[in-house]
Length: 133
Image (cartoon, rainbow, N blue to C red; front, side, top):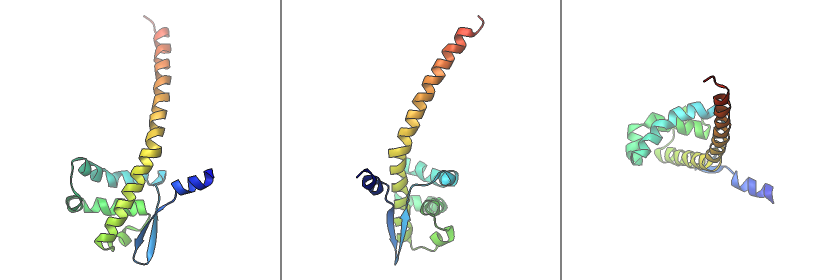
């Protein structure tokens, strides 16, 4: 039962491009640097409230690159898509990875940060107690 639930939760998002389906899954660690570089201007623009047409006009290369990385497709293949195909893939990449970061990465970062802060607080107290003064 648990395996079935995990399979359902971790199932890829499928995007239909003509006769082909592309499976979108969360990015891997090896993809993180390139994906972060590509997606940064997009997230900044979304944070400023830019709409999708303006975003595409302002950052087309970032949209194409982030989509190619997130969909694990060659960038030239993404460049050859129709605009509706690009948008379908781009939204799927953003949704899958936003969900992945919100559900799995953010809680792990928060828990790790809390543990580290507690250890550092203990270390600061220990160092203060042995410091000359």
